[in-house]
Image 1 (cartoon, rainbow, N blue to C red):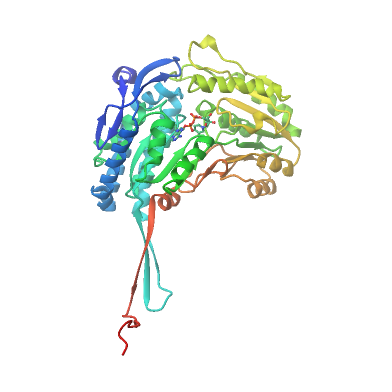
Image 2 (image 1 turned 90 degrees about the horizontal axis):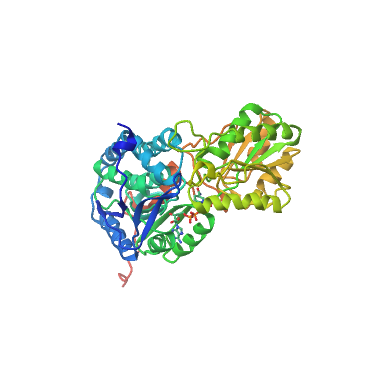
Length: 499
Ligand code: TXE
C-alpha cells in the first residue's frame, strides 16, 4: 500500500494543548495544496483566549511538571525515542509536508525528515556532555555558574521547511528543560501537528510542547505578547522579525531571529567550474528556491562569465518541473499564489531596472492550477537593482559579473542581508581574502549548504539576531545562576554589635 493510500489527511487541524488535541477557537482558514492550487483541509485558528490556555499549560509544565526536574538520562531517552519515531514515520511525515508546502517529496525524504530526527538526537547527545563552570580565583570563595531552563518559549516557524525548522526549535528548547508553545505557519500545519503527536507517543509529558495554529497577527502576536513567555525563537521574514522583537520587548523576552537573505554565490575563474555550476544550481533551485540560505545572487568572474551564464541558463531550462510527489521532479510549485505573484513581479522589475530575463519569468499554466513558475535567471544591470537587493524567495537567480577579489567582496557585502555566502575557488589566497572579508554568518567554500549543527548558525545585519546551534541554543534557552559560598567562614563586620 502506498503512503498516499495509508495516511489520513486530517479534515481539520486545531491546537494541541497539555498533551491533547483541541479544536481551534477562532476563524476557519483553508489549508491549500500548492501543487493542486486548491484547499485540501481546514485550519481552525487559535484565538487569544486559546493562546492563553496553551501558555498556561506550558507554564504549569515548567513550574510543576516532571520534565524540567527529570534527570538528563531520562530526558535523553525521550528525545532519542522521538528521533526513532520521526525516522519510523518519515514517509508519512514527508507526505503530509508535501501536501501543504509543495516541496519535492524526494527532498523531504532525503533531507528534511532525516534532519528533523537528527535534531532530537543531536540535542540528546549535547545535554549529556555540557558542563557548568566554577570560579575559585577569589581566595576563600567558590562561585559556581549553573544553567537553569529559561521557562516558557514561544517558537514561531515558517512554511518553507516546517518540520525541519520547527523540530530544531522544539528540540533545542526542550532538551535544556524549557517548555514551549509552537505556532507553525498557518499555511503548513499538517506535518508539524503529526510530529507533535508522535512526540507525545514517545513519552513526552503533557504541557511540555503545545501547539497553537493561526495567522501571525492573530495567534502569533498573542503568543509573543504573552507576559509569561520568557524566550522567543522565530524563523521567517525580516519585517515580521522586526515586529516580533518590538512586541517581545514589552516584557523583555530575549529573541533569536533567523530572517531573510540575499546570499552571494561567488564563482572565481580559479574554481572547478563544473562543481561550481552544480553548486550554484543547487544553491538557488533546491527547496523550490524558497530557502533563507539560497544563493540567489550569483557573482561570476568576468573572464568566465559568458560561458558560465550560458551553461547555467541551459541547465535551468532543463530542470524537471512538476508534481512534487513524482520521484523524477526537481522543482515543484511555489508555496502559495502570493509567492508565485511575487516571483513573477520580480521578472518585470528586472526589466524595469535595465536587466534582462535570460530564461523563465512566467507562470506555467500548462502544469495545471498549481502555483508553478518557470525557473528564472536574470542578468542584472548592477548590484543596486531590486533583483539583486530584495529577497525574492523562489526559483529566481540573479547573475552579476565581477572583475577582481575586491569587487567581489564589495558587491557581496553591499546588501542589507548577511546570512550566508558561497565561495568557489581553488586558489588559496582568494579563498582566504573572501572568507576574511565577507560579512555573513556562514561562508561555505567549494560546497553547497552544509549545516554543522555544532556550529552557530545565524545572520549579520537584517538576516537576524542570535544564533542556533549546540552552545548557542544552550545559552539562549537557559538562564545562568551563580551560587557563591566561602570555603572557610569569612570575617564578618558585626553591625549593631558595638558598645
Ligand atoms: O513570512 P512571515 P511570509 C521571507 C521571504 C518571504 C517573506 C514573507 O522573503 O517572501 O519572508 O513571507 C508568523 N507575530 N521568508 O509573510 O510573515 C507567520 O504566521 C507573530 C524568509 O509568509 O515572516 C508564520 O508562522 N508571528 C524565511 C511566520 O511568522 C507572526 C521563511 C513566518 O511568516 C506575525 C519564510 C506576527 N505579527 C519567509 N506575523 C526564512 N528565513 O527562511 C507573521 N507571523
